[in-house]
Image 1 (cartoon, rainbow, N blue to C red):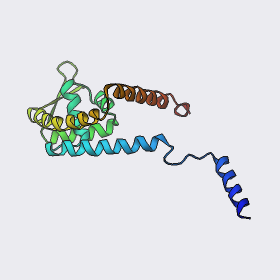
Image 2 (cartoon, helix red, strand yellow; image 1 turned 60 degrees about the vertical axis):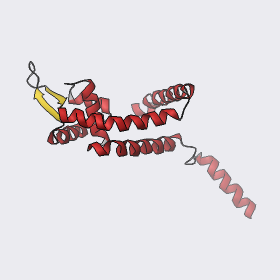
Image 3 (cartoon, rainbow, N blue to C red; image 1 turned 120 degrees about the horizontal axis):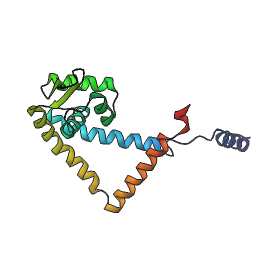
Image 4 (tube, rainbow, N blue to C red; image 1 turned 135 degrees about the vertical axis):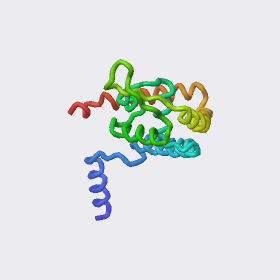
Length: 164
């Protein structure tokens, strides 16, 4: 009787074709993403920034005047989330938003002096996180990891389930 129950249980598992938590690559990606987020959050907090605010300032410093929609895309957040981020940065005096000189309906966003100062402070610590992470790998391993992550991205962004 015990053998039959064991066989029935094994057959049920095979029929369901379930993957264990540890077999699921997504669970590992999620854990690492959360750990990176926590490290970056701790890094930028002394500058008075959140990670999304830091990311927005970083992009704005590289591309002053970029549209909010493009900024949202570059920071991988929704336009609604970016609106909140920009509102908070503006309230903190870290960015200024002004109408475009030729296109009055376009708002240009730029870091203020205080915004650049906060960005510099946060970036020193965030860069430290990135350097410590990179130092855990040889150059060849890091390139392999980047290549594998690019393959993961390609697989996920072309998944047929997204078309349905």
